[in-house]
Image (cartoon, rainbow, N blue to C red; front, side, top):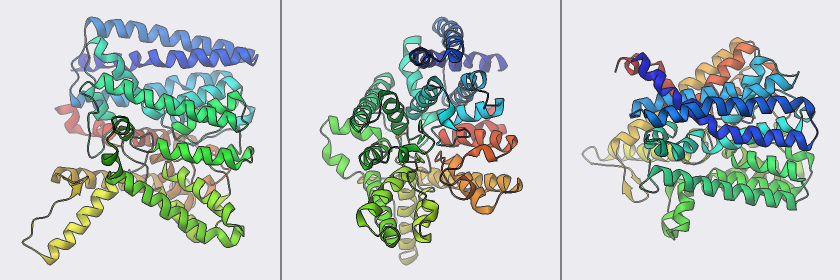
Length: 482
């Protein structure tokens, strides 16, 4: 059994074949900007990625493992952990501001698409900023989707890996072959990234900043090349472009495929999409009404409300205004959005809209059952009758989510932080939002936390990125006994 898991660990090493281009591009950026200290670091990172990935790929080709569903949980979890450590190499060796803990934390934030950060980004070299942004971009769609595009060529089926990474209530194969699905999703992802890049550049950003912001916007990562984020540019146009693409990135990517196939009606009546749009409109309206007296201008209030709602709903965590100075109602709306998350099948984190919809429908059924005790009721999603196991799965997920939020809050409070900081930090790292309230509010960083808290957050961030079950199952005795 031990040797079997050792063989499975070849897959995380094989995944580095996709990190190699990122290291090469970062090396090129270092050459362009004449950052001599970074040449060697990214050259070594690129060579190391090749030396580790190529033998693993050939080994898998010669002796491909059979991946069962339970194996997918193991492979996916260790792939993300391995990437967090590998991605920390450039931070640790080329910047004096990063300790080993800080390097792994920053890398884990990148691949988990969390907007958390611990450093003054404007003092970092361009190559490291690019590495940080492209790591977010890779993590956005999921390194496993990249991997499954390659694994069939190596003789390894990939659907088990995707099921392990995206453990939402309903999974739907877009196309019969998962490799074709992975390629198609990446095409949409790349296409939206190019559109965002072009629009950012048209708004006055230089090429480097436009590219980095396009990467992180589509990944719903929320980081920037500037300490003040998009607020540095003081451009309403750039803010609205960012808000638009954050919202688009948090939509289920399956729907884009359906639109291209002409299934517009199916998209329009999609329960999750309608709920997502409804929450966005309602939250934006509430914040606008609440904050209007403070702004004195409807346009300015709508502008900031739309951006921050887009940011928190998509779990990007981008900030253009000090929302901690907003009225209590407006802050409460943002805080509640941290419990929400984007759509399933998107780059967003959090609980996901579809799970809230399932529980809401089940709540309505329970009230009907009280009125009609002998009635038979079932939930309906998109005019299809939902199974009971879907409801049980959603209830179990949300129970686990709340439990981890509670534990993370207690751990943070145990380090001496106030309850608002502790709770919002728990929601921010688990939901991969990054920004929060209290000591991690606008303009604050995670450098205030001691190292052991950062390591705890690394585990929580990765678990949240993999939607909890994938990692948590590895802590169960039954998993290793079966």
